Amino acid sequence: MKKFLPLLLILISSIFIFSCKDDDDDVQVQVEYPAVYDVNLNFIKDPEFNNLYHYTVEFNRALLNQDIVLVYRKNNPGANSPIWEPLPKTYYFSGGSSMDYIFDFTTADVQLTLDADFDLTIQDGLFKSTYLNGQTFRVVLVPAVFGKNSVDPRTLSYEEVIAKYNIDDSKIGKL
Image (cartoon, rainbow, N blue to C red):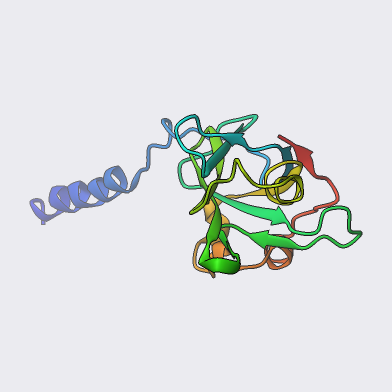
């Protein structure tokens, strides 16, 4: 019995030692998520290509690596009830030509790109005002934890994203 008691004490104390958790190195980051921002822009022509335009928007604070950025283009400017089309979006024109709005993002910015299979510099003023200048995009920042164990937010419409994540889109920020 004398030999059994010290072994039992060692076993019990080892359970407590290994069950302790050291959280001293965890950093808590408070971010204002989810958030919605409007970007009004005129695309800037790529210096090397006549069919490629870009616009880069920097975030006012860095995102976390796992966060998701969704981008929507306002398709009916000036309307009371806007139509927000999710990017990427392809437009097809007569003659078989096409044009794509795409985006990519980092933790610091989002880059919007307009890429066509035809020369955008020779288009008329109506085309440029419809697709290149005075464009409004809505950028939605969604923390990845919101998407955990649920549907991918990139498959949802703007209205579905707003409803799913309880986003108050009456308070739109500007980037």
